[in-house]
Amino acid sequence: MPTHQTVLLVGGTGRTGHRVLEQLLSRGASVRVIVRSPHKLRDSAAENPNLAVVEADLLSLSDDEVRCHLRGCDAVISCLGHVVSFRGVFGPPRDLVMQATARLCRGVEALQPPDPLKFVLMSSVSVNHPGGLDTRRGMFEKMIVWMLRGLVPPARDSQQAADFLWRNIGTANPFVQWVAVRPDTLLEGDVSDYALHEGLVSSLFAPASTNMANVAHFICELVANPKTWGTWKGKLPVIVNATSSKS
Ligand SMILES: NC(=O)c1ccc[n+]([C@@H]2O[C@H](COP(=O)([O-])OP(=O)(O)OC[C@H]3O[C@@H](n4cnc5c(N)ncnc54)[C@H](OP(=O)(O)O)[C@@H]3O)[C@@H](O)[C@H]2O)c1
Image (cartoon, rainbow, N blue to C red; front, side, top):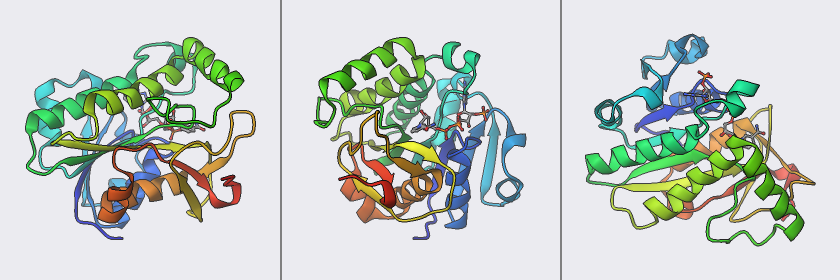
């Protein structure tokens, strides 16, 4: 579905983020990206007149600057993730996704838009639905996930960001509505058939797979299609390739 909305995207240089960026632009959206390294943007996107590039480290921006970049946006998408290196995983900022989520959502609340702004977080199936609403994990798997969160900062970070949306933003916020998209093991590949589920459909020991292009497609549908947004707002949908769906 095409869209003429204005979208702020963070993490737009990442493996999934650049696909989100390309798909948003191809649907006609106006996109603002906040990136540390503009040279990492694909030429096809960088040359698009509907793209505005802000070169900055998101977490170093002042609250005023964050509000300035949010002003006039209909939606915000975060595809941030920790760089896969020792420093990226164990160095600061250990709470990158959580901090970015909180700063962006608080920035929107401060702006008090007349209609709620859509916030889409790229999350993961390693994240539990807050409030114990995922029933599929067994005790042993829960223990492994709990240990992972203790040992691997990005796992803890992703859970804290989802918890923040559920507990601190909630589902009746007048200024921010949100969806936390939970893909399984990320794969290359084109957009294909995919399935959406309210809860987990696989285990850490027998993972399903999700094309990054499908994550990008669903995120763009959330932003562009009011019906899709109405179905998933305030939820943590699990997205898997149709071929690996195990419901
Ligand atoms: N890998 C998987 O199988 C998997 C599965 C499910 C979910 N996920 C989740 O999906 C999300 C995105 O994954 P991905 O693999 O697409 O991401 P990615 O390719 O690692 O991209 C990460 C993005 O975050 C940015 N970033 C990293 N550290 C930053 C910092 N300190 N300040 C500002 N920006 C920073 C990167 O910018 P630069 O280009 O400047 O570094 C990049 O744009 C992650 O949260 C991940 O946990 C991953």
